[in-house]
Image 1 (tube, rainbow, N blue to C red):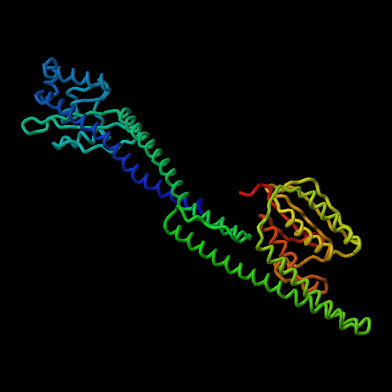
Image 2: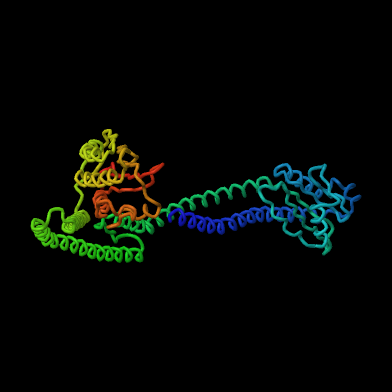
Length: 467
């Protein structure tokens, strides 16, 4: 969930920062250009004041070139161009030059400079130039009319380079970009903290749900931290878990009590049937059938009691040599396998893990017994121990008939047995007991097909110690 929520928050914050930063950058560029334009307007106004009293006749201006005012105007224009690198000139209405700098510069026939000149002839200052962006190598043209006795006699035109202005704009943009980046980093950090604060109760709830689903019914959620809605959810979850645990405890108690209470009457009944068999002819099939069913019922009651105890007991975890323990169980079941004509082969190198030795032994007994029971004569059952990342595994494979996909989904359910194997002795509770014993210690049991035929059972126990 965090991988979906965090990018969404980052995109939203980036959009907000862009919505603030782009107008700010545009405003900065406009302000920089406006400052330059205002300076050029002041300059053109000063030059217009100097040119106001120079004669408007080009010939007379040429013959009176030594005129003090014209000389002062030319000197000012030269100094202006030399210091600032800005081309400037005063041009009569017909386009001829009164004074200009540099010498080679003249009024063009068309273009931005000519447009500004023509507009100034109408007795108004030229419009503000178009915005010049840092990547554009354009100039700024400003023109002001020279008015004498209410008439426009000449026009002052400045053509300014924009390198410095564009550099200042770019520098301002870099500052804005750095500020935006710093704000984005702070926003990402805040988003990380926010999502962590919001989702931490969800992760704890998910982990606790997994623990309860795998049999650790004592797990609960600490209802602290996070938004109020998630804290209420945590409290509600704990109440639900308490109720579920109470119901399961009542169920286990009922099964254990019922199994225990039924064993004594059943034992007495079997004893009376045994005594009755002495009064009947030897080999009576009816009495033998009754005895077999009674013993089967006694086995079911014993398994029910074992299952109730397995689901209720706490695992006594310790560092255990899984290889040695498995080799011991293989050796214990070898005589049974040989009597059935089945080869029981074990590959059990030393491998340590955290497990309850008694519970793991009982689970391995159930799995190996099941494999030997369903493996035909002349075939083999292989038991392999190996480390597998964070777990150690015991894999038991047989060459039996195997199970279908539907049967694989049901194996391990209480009292379930395949319809094809109803004639084989068993109560259908052995694998359920194994699963409960392993789950109490953080282990698991899995089933899958073994090619070309047979069943593969994988018993896994954790290699890391309990938290």
